[in-house]
Structure formats: structure tokens, C-alpha cells
Image (cartoon, rainbow, N blue to C red; front, top):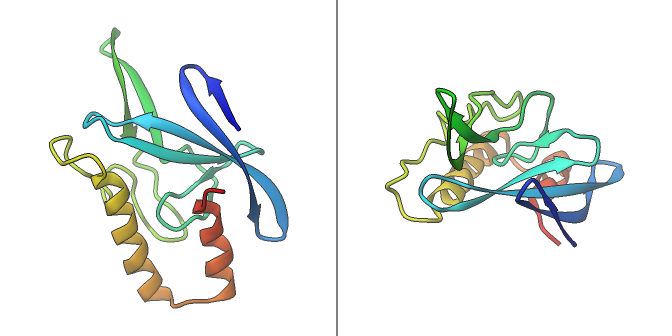
Length: 137
């Protein structure tokens, strides 16, 4: 199911979170490059790290910028500079991709960071459960 919220597509998925069966909404935000990124949010209003799938206790990893210096601009997504406590990714820094890069580069960067993180911690049941927060059904 797709819901509209302030001009942003929200896809609602019944995805598991640990022992719970919690809905995760997917917000599709446009980067300056034109790439559409997916930022996940739980039905409790918590956000999901796009690298490791952890539930974040902070601001969303990416947010929509609609004005600069009090002037309305064409909205685009930008990193929040928050740091995921689980994988250590600083959004907008560690996962930075130039707006000149081809569409798909942001998702590819998250996948690269995810693979590095998985190699560091190894595979476990907890890891696999956490990564389910990044799946789409």
C-alpha cells in the first residue's frame, strides 16, 4: 500500500522487527542527483539505519530540505549528520555521494558500507533479523 504524506510516497510494509511484527513505512526522498532514496520509519516513529537496519533513537538519517536562508528551494534530501550507534555510519559523511554521481550511487554506497560492516561483525541470527528491517515485501 502506498500513502501520500506531504508530497512524499510512503509504502507501508508489514516487516518484522525482532520479536514484534511492526509496520515499516518507506519514505521516498529525492536527492539532488535525482536519485530516489528510501528511508524507513517504524509505526512508532523510529527510523531505520539504511546501512545496517538498526532502529535509530535519533533524527532520521536523511531529511528533506525545502528552504535555504529563508528562501524556498526545490526540495532535496540531505544527510542528518547523525551517527548510527550500531554500525557507526555518519549520515551525509560516511555515505556521502556527490550529486554528480549517477542515479543509484547512494543505494550502492549503503550496500558497500553494509558489506564492510557485516564482514566486521560476522553473521548471526541477530544480524539477519536486523537486516530484515531493510527488506521490502
